[in-house]
Image (cartoon, rainbow, N blue to C red; front, side, top):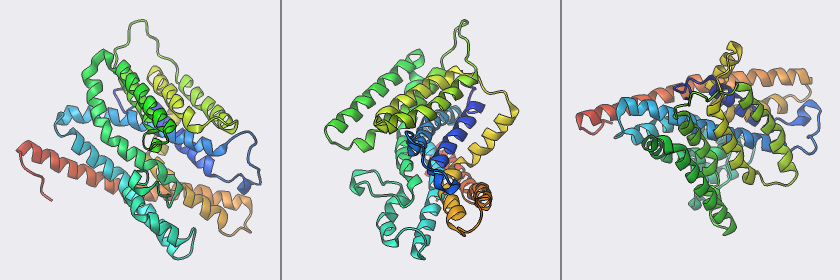
Amino acid sequence: MIQSQAESKNLDLLRSFAVAFVVISHFPPSALGLSSPRGYHLQSLGLLGVLIFFVHTSLVLMLSLERQVAQLGVRRLQSTFLIRRIFRIYPLSVCVVCLVQLLSLVGVGHGFEHHLTSFAYDILLVQNIPATSFTPNSLAALWSLPFEMQMYVLLPALFLLVRASGRRAPMRVVGLWLTAMALALGLYRLNGRYDLVKYIPCFLPGVLAYALGTQKPSARTARLPPIVLFSLVGALAVAYPILVARGIRENLLAPFVCLALGITIPLCEDITSHVLQRLGKVIATYSYGVYLTHIFAIDLAFAWAPQLPIVAHLAIFIALMWLLPWAAYKFIEAPGLELGKRIAHSFQRAAQRGLSPSP
């Protein structure tokens, strides 16, 4: 079974690779005096990082739901789960959107008018729903958050399905994955709202990893060493951007990339290196802040004072890559998480007493 549960050190390291791929994909090679690599679509490395996030997040949240259902039962699972996720995601994203607007207002960055048109959609994280006509994001990294928020609505139901399915759970999740693939391809061919569903097959492999991890292994089943998982990640980091550079569509490959990860994760033992465990834990803790602030670090480090030597720019970049996520976590993420936990607990206590929660 997967380390009962979100204690798996592999998951922290996997998340660290994901956020590193995103940062690398946005780092301008020209800043180091290099040219973009030929035959390698660097931006696709960032999408690969996001795909790893999708699988990782689904799996970790299924493990979280397992703990919550043991404490609360099924009845209030959906509401308490969504409350916690809202206070996990929104506080930092709202602050970042407001900061972008402020910088635009004072003439730094893109034009204020462009951001003003998408400000409300960015705040609510609904940029991808039909009513918004897929409004451009004021910050590129925001694009994945609406898909995550919408998938959070489905995860409790998927958790209960896996829980009720027993040994048949993996096959049922595979059936859902095939159905989601058929729906996405059908909408794509019919010029429908394909963008709304195209990432569902990328989240479901995280659910599959959980379903596989809950199965009792047979006596003859041998766990694979963790190098298998991280060799797969490394191979994908090489092959995925090369295949995209050769003309294969990113979103055609994406579900199969995620499926490979979802199958491999529960088959592998945890890493045993204390150094890698500690490094993975630290980076995973601040990864959301890294994801949303790394563009600011890149811009500040390389656009400010261009006459400085490259070593100085790199030093500023490294310092900001630690400082900005640390500040985001300490002053925004952690308080938001604590507030979400308190509100969720108030709902739980009210449900136990048969009352409505007090405001």
